[in-house]
Image (cartoon, helix red, strand yellow):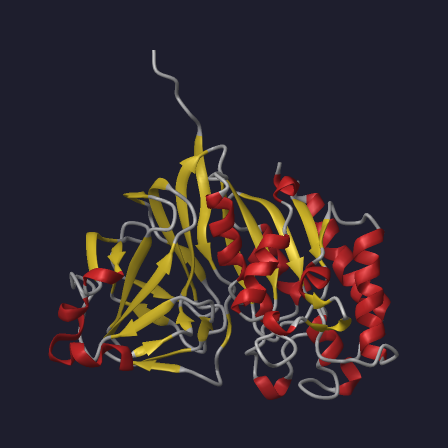
Length: 386
């Protein structure tokens, strides 16, 4: 008698939406083809659409999904139409989030998917994200059934790369139906987490033969723990981390672990990208981090704190640098988290620990280079996830 294994839904790809009023996407009778990579294998999929920050209801005429191949002119195989409560079209209301019905689609880890969304009516989309995925925009018509990019663009195929956005609209998640032993790690933070280290960490886990964990990236550029995006950026930097934490981290399908790396924008932004009145103390930041831990633990989730890396301030007595050092010391020594990841130690210059090592610096003294993101992924002790 064959053994029956329990199965459940696990996030295979996800992102945190924010308000893109500053960069709206205006469409009419056009199709979006969003290319993303899943971090989990399984036998069924469903997607999550969000109009969380929209200014209007959005009529979606059709949605299809299929396996995508970059090296074959964007070939899509196993193309299937998704339904929503049995319907092929839907109206995604302002502020609403919906899941599709599931479809049978066998996925391997790191497969790429093409999700095509037809927008028939004149529409302005402002709920979007920026996570390294790619979105092609057709010139006109319902192209959801197109088998490749040549068919998607027709005579304009040679100019396909001119019709691309990396601010991914509407889709915020893809869940995979997979073995019960498989779980998700949510990486939560700001632009550094919206960068490449979660991808490099997923690849590292796979190289080590750790196939039962997907890595979900919930970073928003400019995001802060304690304050919403300042008015001058009109929501682009997202709502405060403590406000979005439950939706963007706790409620992800199959989440077992969370890694938090956030706080540098709370320290740096007041007086520049945010009003000086939003200056926070070291204790304010610690209280925010405690909120993340307490909320995770209430939901049976383990959570690990990432130390904040240098940001270009080389005066050890600067008030902002002192905050960073004190918060990092608390992360390392308080034992409030279930463990910590010392990103600061991994990327700082040993000869001058107030700055990033040159090869790990993208050039702005704050964000890592590609080598820096790889070093972040290598700095994570995989024994934390046993």
